[in-house]
Image (tube, rainbow, N blue to C red):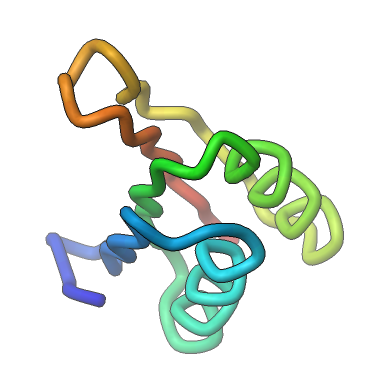
Length: 78
């Protein structure tokens, strides 16, 4: 995890669910905002479920084929 401005960046590329969601949950303990980068096809569903459970807002920041690395990016805010 790294800090990028006010958001903590969670790079979970190469991890399979539920690990990206678990890493995001850990980051959100201390940060009001995080950006998750994950290439697991189930990550979008896991992030949405986690955010709904905690009342967080999720914004997709694209990724996937546009960036060439196959990873999606989601900004999560309290």
